Length: 304
Image 1 (tube, rainbow, N blue to C red):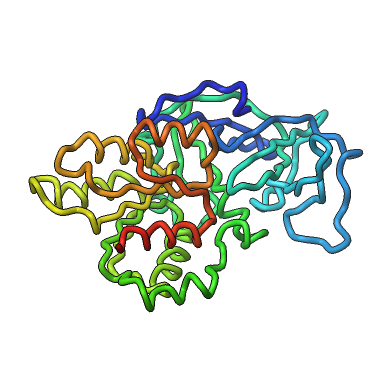
Image 2 (image 1 turned 135 degrees about the horizontal axis):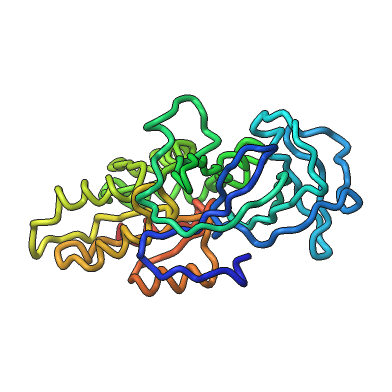
């Protein structure tokens, strides 16, 4: 899918959504995380010796086996519709290839992140979705694949920080940095905050999307000229409701008063194509989740 899909321009605040069927219910998935779409063949699935809730087994894909997850089981949707052949969506993010079984796909839609309403503003107590969007008069919930992966394979989402990296706080004055962190996932925000605090970083402001992060930055620094922003670091996810990380980065680097803020794109979508987009927008660094050790080492370089 990534190899053949339409390449979105950098910083346009656009995304492409694959609308899929779980039983007869419509859901959405970010196309940027989709590698390919396959017809389900049970002969290519090997059952696991120990049952893992939501995991159907290992799927043989391009001569390798990858985890196969059942979205109906994960979302607790009872199957009532018979389909001739189910579909497998192969995804790639967080440096990991996985697959998800669904009952069908509809089509791909190009939208703006501003059209996506953050899930926590309209619903409560459901972490499986990042938000909802109106498509052809239907309200489509966008699946949070990172959250699903975090519940099944937590090591793929949050990396343990090495003891040597933690101990460097004795020689590096980490508390001098002001860190502005934007990520729509409460799970990621909580995990990164805990990790950075443990490492000795104290001044951390968190935001659930690029829109509120930009508002904070503009209010604090937007009208100040010739200010020293060496110690101000923005760490931003890429895919977020309202305003994505690429658009946030673009807005900062086009503002003469803000362009010296050090910007780090911290995302599960980092690949060669995405690195090129980030460089085009003058982001200072790109780090793939969940490489928190590399993130802290990069922050340490700003403490010099």
